[in-house]
Image (tube, rainbow, N blue to C red; front, side):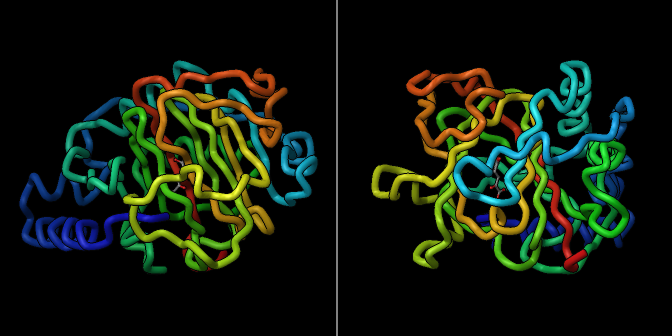
Amino acid sequence: MPVDMKALLARERERRRAAASGDPAGAATASSSAAATAPVVMAPRAKISLRDFDVGERAGVRGLHYVPDFISPDEERAVLAGIHAPGTESRWVRSGRRRVANYGGVPSSSEVTEPLPQFATSLLEAIASAGIVNERTAPNHVLVNEYVAPAGISPHNDGDVYAPHVAIVTLGGAALMDFWPNDGSVTADDDRRDCDEREPTPIAQVLLRPRSLLLYTGDAYGLRHGIRHRDVDVATDRCVNAAVAGVEIGDEVERGRVRYSVVFVRKGHG
Ligand SMILES: O=C(O)CCC(=O)C(=O)O
């Protein structure tokens, strides 16, 4: 999760200071539950079997799952409103070409410093009701990425703090995520480097449609992943979820103006 750690630490310190001093503006950002917006309500999901959503198998990658249309368009709108609720603006930190809002402490530290915001707990309840996480594996930290096209995220591996599970809900726009073997050569700690032609051919690509849920765990968690810097993605024969995402090899997929990803992780090796 390459994030501008300096900016994030400064923001986190500022937030804690404001909360401790009783500053109302700080308090609004210190606890996202203070954000005055309609609560996000999600219908409980029917239990799903992840085996039905395994997209990594055909590329020999274990632990890669893609669930299309995990949330409805109304739920997507409600989550986006929660992400931008009053008091959340000060959460955003620029990291390379994207912005990141972080909830639950400093991403690289295993310390959990606050509960998840309401939009995230609702999404999480939906994920839990589908049987995808349980009490032992439930995420306790969320990062929201905002990508204004053509922004992407440089190749990276999420490292030990979050291992072994990540769940990502895509909102607003689409993007093609590439996965490469983790040869140890590049673990970017910022977004200055693009995923570009210097990267070897990915072993798998997943087209992340709006309202979908991506899960990577185990072997898939160990890979590097990234999103290229471009307005339009082209599905290649490595696109492991092409059928379910409704594309054929060679199809061009517009990103859309802005994509958000809500990235759930569990710190503390649950
Ligand atoms: O936006 C995404 O789907 C990927 C986000 C990501 O890789 C990260 O935050 O580390």
